[in-house]
Length: 450
Image (cartoon, rainbow, N blue to C red; front, side):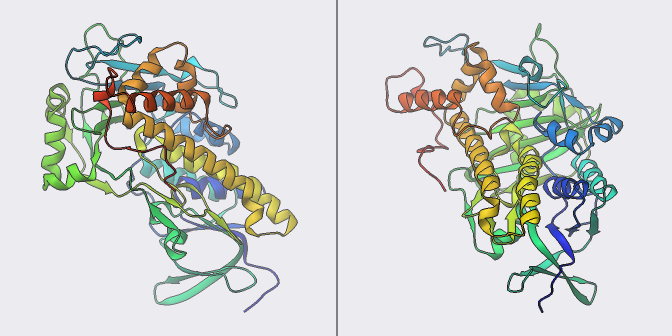
């Protein structure tokens, strides 16, 4: 059935950070937008630490007062800890002992459009719910507990089909925005999804109360309990996240390769065996109180052959997800909404909803996620190089720029080119002092994966 006017300008599938932010942008611009969220919020979700580029979105949407009102913990920086032998791997660099701590503060680099020296750690159940209902307060129609069953693109305007109890229904729109997260609604429906054969990571995580967040810090080191911590494990390509949720509650997750997880059998035992490889971390967690059951995430790195098409586009995890070691997930979701809304508003103004109308958005998002992906690839391939660049004043602020989430402007930031060149030199030089430190996860990582 064709019709001259659709029910909505934009229909958003999914009410997570990407969907909530996009709906808020569109509603604030006076557009008629509906969000369909299959779950009832609030609900638990992983991905609890943000990066500073998220602040631009909160500012655009007048959402910063909400973040402050809700007293989400302020995140001033990040800390990486490692343990191992006392052998040094200098080779012209300062202090690259295997047993080390490296940290960085966001305030060290001014960031355009960001006027505060911190970002946030969030309880995703609360955060996602607040953002979605902020969009509703701006004028978006929000429908919770209703999942989209199908989208029909054969009519003049796309038609989204769903059921409310036994009653089948549908709405039409000019543009469909898939923000379904790792459910990847359109990616699966249109057979566009490509699983990442390099990053086949698994995560198992939970919350602890009364955990000593400084348990891995040495005497004399500055206390940074409100930072995110990444604890390297002496297990190939494995690490632990430590994220403050409240004053006393901390999210702890173990990330490892799928083969390590599968070989372990019992998931809870695997968690504790992994943590036990860092005794100080293990002892602190054993003294704390686990307040949530263990949850696992797997096969979560993927891309899409295309992220836009005629009358549709993907935002956030619906279009791309990479390894979470630099807390990229929510940042990419929020910023993809920020970039997408420009092309969407232009398309609504011109009446051209063809794929080419979303070309600038697609190019921007692919450029940013590619930079994230290559940065993470370098990181896993040669951890010690990352530590070296953080400590080296020639590169520290350039690395910080990436960690702040400013990855969308350049095809490849110069610091990333330099890191890649060093990795390739180490790979091709068996006698290099760092050669035996190469990880095996990202072999040939710089060949086009997608």
